Image (cartoon, rainbow, N blue to C red; front, top):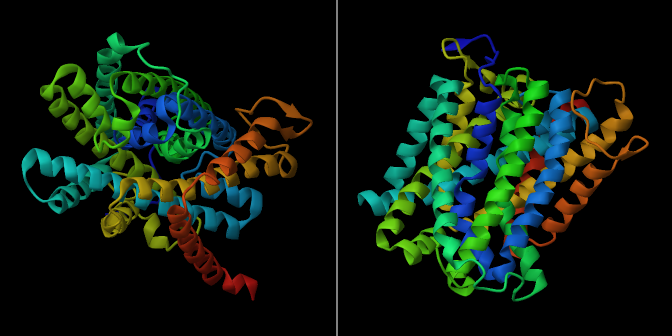
Length: 426
């Protein structure tokens, strides 16, 4: 099964853009829309807009950095170039945690839908999901991408159904009504989870054709499209169903469809949510296995994790490693808590990515940048600094439970970094 450690460039602009959109449109919007509405009231659309702007600011930094270093290590590679191996390894480990925890949480959602539809235990559905998706990912990146694109079209259909059924209800509520302003930003911090996925476009850049130009374009299209779609869905949802009722719903978009179209629509949206959760796990694991591969190839993780299948040119050891760890984390059952733990990790990562871009503008100014973030004062880039500040602001909106779990994992990461680098310290 082992071959030369190189990944094959298979993905074009359309494919990588749709893979990214599919991951962004994943389980977050289908599960967290209700909890966000409960916090932000009818202003939940603004929560989506603010979270989307924060994501877009960081995406611009990803665009420039990925055009400079189109490698599978992504965040690890960027931060390492700016701040050295130790800080790069620390950030890389946070990304691995994020991938594992997110795929576990979303797989739990899949398991619940699977159990309701087929009458079997959650665990059978979850384990089957990881096995099937791992085999597909090992078989080929193009096949994995095509499956993700197919499911993306299903997800998109579900959201368009929600927007369509809500058209007659538009204008029936005050869209600036909110319980309080702090709830609007707390909702932004929570639903930031619904925007995560665009960074997987970068993690797949080593398997993307003409990545220096293709990856930035794909990022820009994916972010703009999903921000617009989410705002439309948010406005529709609170128009059809009172935000207080939405806040108590575990299946908010299915409930919105049921109000407008009846019980058959509820079943249909449940099926779409099943595919949506599957797609999120697929693309998160795709991106996660690539950052594990990139870190292993650079020597920061065991070299065995960089093994590539001789026939299929995929990092099979990293894929199965991520799948096995994800199965272990399914014991974390509350998706809102887990989403916020994932956000804890990614807010730190985004802060460091933006900081890395600022640092590299000064420390490596001569490097070729096929894409460059606009608006600078001298060498100082304005938008990445706003991206760093907005990430810190949303970090401050997280609840105590998420911060406690997050700090424990950060402590483990620091310990691993110190153990890994103790020889170089000596």
